[in-house]
Structure formats: C-alpha cells, structure tokens
Image (cartoon, rainbow, N blue to C red; front, side):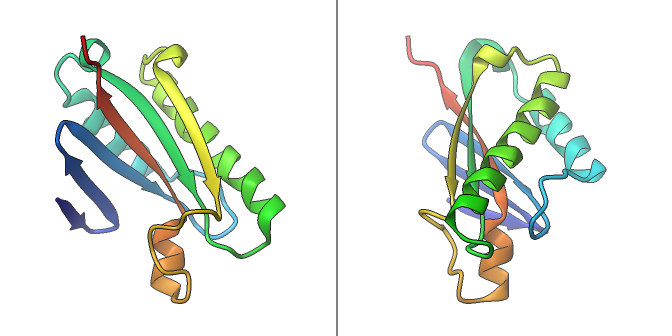
Length: 129
C-alpha cells in the first residue's frame, strides 16, 4: 500500500516501513522541514534499534548523465545517513544502495516523475530472529 502525503511517499509492505526524503535538482541538501519530519518519524517507531535495520536507497533523475548521477546518489544517501546518525542511530545499523539514474520508480519523461525520483528512501526492515 502506498500513500502520498504532500511531497512524502509513505509505503508499507508487510513489516517494512518507508519514508522518502526529496531533493531539488542537482542537490544533496536536506531542508530543515524534512530533517524535523525524519527525526519525528524515527522517534515514533517503538524499539527502533532492536526491531529494525535501516536501509537507505538513493535515486536521481537522468539529468547530468550516469557518472554525475552515481556521485549525486551517493552524496544524497550520505547526507541522509549523517542526519540519522545525528539522531543517535549508530552507523552500523545503516546500509546504503545508490541506484543513481538506474531503476527509476517514476517515469522520467515528466517533470513530476523526475521530481519524485530525486529522493532517498529510508526503509526500516524488521530484524528476523
């Protein structure tokens, strides 16, 4: 199930919990509103560190070519990682996958699709014992 709330995409598949952080074109800066929302979201998850691993999945639009977007994707996921670490989450709990312009979720033939592809998905996967 996927819900669109403003510019945030929330999805839940089984026990997976997801929040997306969106970026401007060519940017890896996270605005203060999204930082605050991310902190609030992480703080709302009971027993976060005991129950979930955190995966950061980064995407870009195709503007700028492959090499540039690989770099930009990496910078975006590292920016989100730093914000999460500042919220007292240990770095070893976080893994990253930087897709760059590969595997877009939204159609890059429209402005809206490109805008929605400029993001890092913060995905909480349950730890299975």
